[in-house]
Image (cartoon, rainbow, N blue to C red; front, side):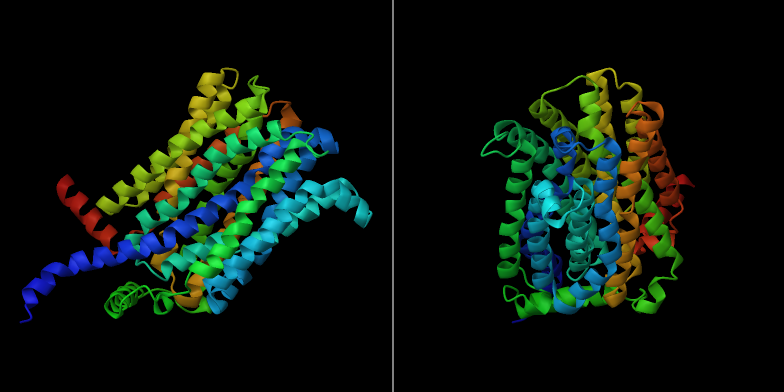
Length: 455
């Protein structure tokens, strides 16, 4: 005989079990994709250590080339996300990974390609980086959009941290791997170490393109591994979560809350990309000459940042508080960057404060990426998340150029790091300006509780 009270008691267990099932099915694939993506995105920072001499590039050429990626990314971000929403994540994410793997590997042959097309090597470097940005455009916001197809807002912070964990893990392992590849494969079959690094590190993306196309499903309805009851639960939760959100495309570009998120991402990503692109050079300026040792040292900040990010996301998820869980890490990251530059002559202290900076910046990311889903849904979410990430990722230009300009003006690569730290302070102020209504129902309850305790 059916027992209603028993069914009610088991409902939370059934819901948690269903979401665990979804997480185990899709999150490992997305995490591995992002690891491959981030490896291809920032390995240019290690290639720089030897590539500049081989190609006779100045730091300014490198900085402009590194930043060209983000212009391609910016222009094609929103269209790419809209195409993903229309044609499905399985096909579109696989397409993204295949195309960016090919272009990332082709950067290794910048000089032969320049000769073939009768252009300067620097021009071909700019073109290849721009094409890489076009090819990868839409991956990150596409995944954020895809997670919004499965999880309501209040369940997203831990899922986001699980996905974003790929970033510091990739940077941790990538630093060691890149340093080892450049050292071990130098002059193998006539290619420089940095060329082999770009070729070998592009292979995981090719593999993941096949895995995505064969293993990922587009949405809840197409998930054959879910029961009818599980699908109904997931869709009902999303329907309730979507009430009151912006869903029309025309409303996205005039929504002040969307633009607030754009400026938050722009400021804290400026600090992050400046850190990611220039950390190997900052460590080298402290007196470390071995590429492999530089790789090992860059692994330390990102390895610690993985732990900090997971702990911060878990605590935010448990308490329901978001604003402070994003603003405080931004302040910590800014302090870490400034102090790493101040103590640049002391390798131990410099790496220590770079670790603090990386932990702060990465800890706020999973909290931030739960916020677009509190405002947007449907096609508006596709366009809005793409727009936020597109404008926010122009910070790849500002982050890399700030450091290059500071070095050209002052002769010290570390002076630009002070500006990057101030960008993170600005981000913290913008985060504190987020209206409570934007943080979801659970946040309202948290703040009411805090007010009662204070009274």
